[in-house]
Length: 72
Ligand SMILES: [Zn+2]
Image (cartoon, rainbow, N blue to C red; front, side, top):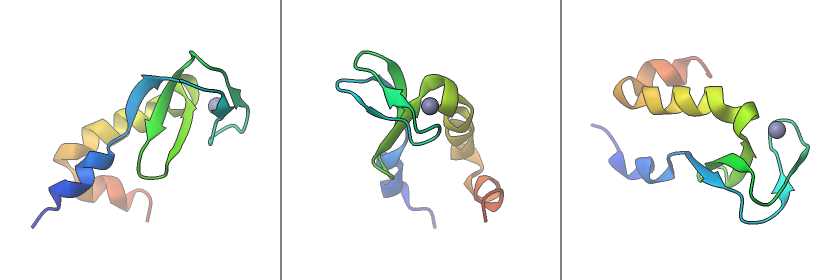
């Protein structure tokens, strides 16, 4: 049985609406920059920092089990 509810937390690419800090590199995110937002962790990272993880996450929709096994 799959839990589709958690897909509401899928990461997405957005434009930063305010200055914050990248959770990956720790450097500032400026307003207006393209970022990846991760609703599950309520954090964001630069597009360049998180793009690979973002793409992996999207690809994992069809193979979530294997994706998770890379992390645990
Ligand atoms: Zn970064």
